[in-house]
Image 1 (cartoon, rainbow, N blue to C red):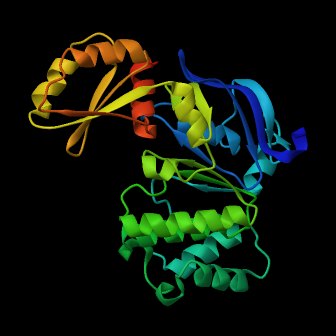
Image 2 (image 1 turned 180 degrees about the horizontal axis):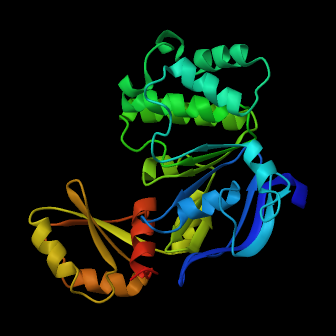
Length: 308
């Protein structure tokens, strides 16, 4: 694959605020039509990194391109071809849905504005609510309006910063169906999320912790690279068992999952030896495939807070 096949192709991207490094030398390549997920704890630099990609912040170090434009010197060109959906609803609550979309279309000087707004309302199921004030909308409908506004100027890259926070499961599922449809049409999507089920719907993942990129790849590649061994244990007294397990060498994490515990470690032999000390007839132990949540909790445990 040559450089022109990448919508995003950056290396060594870094950002500092005062004496704190918020993004620490990140390399990233994203293909056209990919849904690329960013995960990591709060304050890990995900939003800052995305803002540098879309031209809202200038990197302090590094180089590369977004949509073929230089991220250091051609930020205005990048902004015109990017749709950016922020964490917080940022449209006018005293305007109707249609008025908000018309305003955004004016900002981008969209040709044949009325027809474009009408098509946008139709596509995202907002037509019957076009006269409803944005401030009266529920979280799911605000999300649809925000997505419609991001798409009104036909961007080539969509940047979504925790777009489904605070919306119900059906609205989340409908949103992801729409995102996959857009990606199938060739739109590239970068999305930050804390939801593991959403992460699994991305084509590629990157995990950032306190400014550092710890792992990236497909879900299968990310899980495999962690080399984490996980056991599931069921039975009575799991809370007390968890306390004992956490005191043993070789056990990296013990996490409750419904009526079971997930017990994980990177050294399989040491982990099994530790578990053997507490095995009894009351509990059922099963070796399982580590999941994304197991992997990310493990990665978070290894990370050092750059603001600590």
